[in-house]
Structures are given as structure tokens and as C-alpha cells.
Image (cartoon, rainbow, N blue to C red; front, side, top):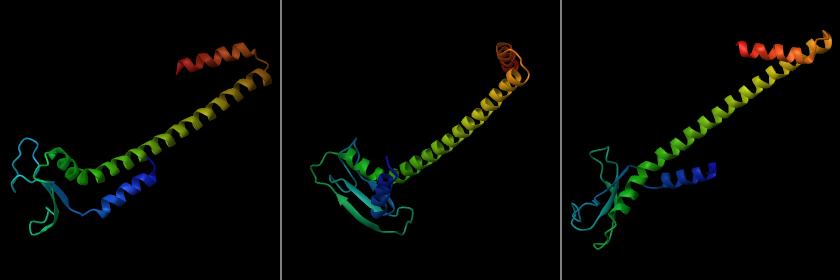
Length: 142
């Protein structure tokens, strides 16, 4: 998912009515507080004096209570999911930076190792196989 797609989702969420969305839908019962019709009520339920902004009501014969529950809960789920995606992206970015730092350090050690090996064989005239065996034994000692 691209940053633009995430931003589009967030914009749609921001344009929807704010506050907690609830539903009277109950998949275990056809009864609701308002009779047979199921609703999604939209308003600020953290404020006891707040009024409902609006109510979305379904047909009396509509038996898809799970859809209403999903819609109502999705309003609260979207910002949490967006935050989690962004948090995980930040973690991946940090992990990639750490991996690159390790690769750079490893490359520097490899270069130093190879330079030391060249120095021992070329400058001191030591046998390349003996130098490689000795350096390898040092690797195993740590």
C-alpha cells in the first residue's frame, strides 16, 4: 500500500462524522431497542450531554446485522490500523538502516582483513596459504 493510498483512507475517515459509532445490531437477536429496525448511531458518546449527530437506519426486513456491526466498528478501527501501518513502516525503515550500518561495518572489516592479508603476503613475503590459515584460526578464537 502506498503512502497516497494510506492518506486517501485517512482523508475519507476524517470526512466522516467524528465520535464513536455504535449499532443496535445484534446477530443473536432480531430485537433492537427501537424495534425491528437496526441502526448505526453516530455521535460523541464520550460526552454525556452530547446529542446524536445522525442515525443510519436499515429496512425492517434487513437481516445483515453483521454488516452494521462491521461498519460501526470500522470507524473506530481505521485510525488504529493506519497508526499501526505507519508504526510498522517506521520499524522497517529503522531495521533497514541498521542492516545497512552492519553491512557497511562488515565491508570495512573485510577490507581491513584483506589489506592485512596482502601486507603479510606481499610486504613480508609470507606464504599466502599460511597467512590465510593463521587468519582463519584467529577468526575461530574469538
